[in-house]
Length: 384
Image (tube, rainbow, N blue to C red; front, top):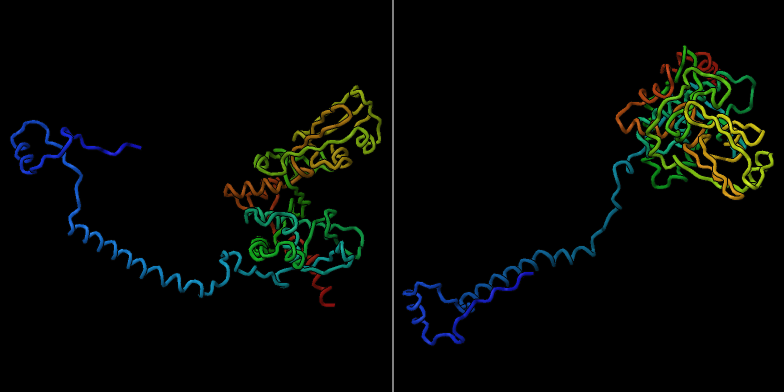
């Protein structure tokens, strides 16, 4: 911080006659003598005091009434966003072409749920409501196509068409979602129902037949060809790059197993001296195709399922009596990546762009045109 200026005074004392100093300055060619500290006159002091008094009075006039009133004011309801205040879009029974019989896992009872309400319950359970709306639309289209395809191709008459678990599609009722989301229910459900309403009645077809619209959470950077994980080769489930998934919090994972845990899960004996040879072959997408442990071959899918790994793209390190499995991605890897869909939506892609990227060569058609017999039979049942 700079030091305050101090005038340089040549003499130790001020001249007795101030007029003599002025006269000396007038005739001198040297720098004028420094003046002493300036003193305020009585008039200036009064003027300053008046200004200060006026400012103080104004502050009192403006502030004090507010301080008096505030404690007695009604603060009113807490501030909320427009999304929180807006009620969700209502999906009416008339919006659905058919109903779905769902076996509820907890109650063990069958519920008849209008199609579009069922789709909203699946999207709510299968994809984060915070995702981009175009990604939610793509998920709604996949969920609707899945159940329609299931109903069209079921071979036996079951009491329940489908469960509410991962065996088919996870489904949550409105009551369950209100309990799960709490105060966030309105804005989350509004986004979900907006996506469902925007794709109402639409299904995915390949050669005019509904598809199996597989989807999963996070890829390893590529999706998987259907035949590399399942048995059947489906032309619309082809491996594609999905670089957006690297932003997923589920992209990397690691699990550590003891030697005994691996032996028990796989039904083999592993020498504890680290002498067992491991050979891995990989699919086009980089996932494990086969893992050879000693003289035994395992598919990547088998290893993933028996050890509960997130993905079949894994690497293994043996350290003493432990095995360290590092995985990339989350899910089987076939079809649409949910985090990939969200990444595409953030880049401005529409749900149609997303769908046609992850499902090759598919068309988006109306349910009433694609499955008229299914719609008709459901309408006939409702009249009985």
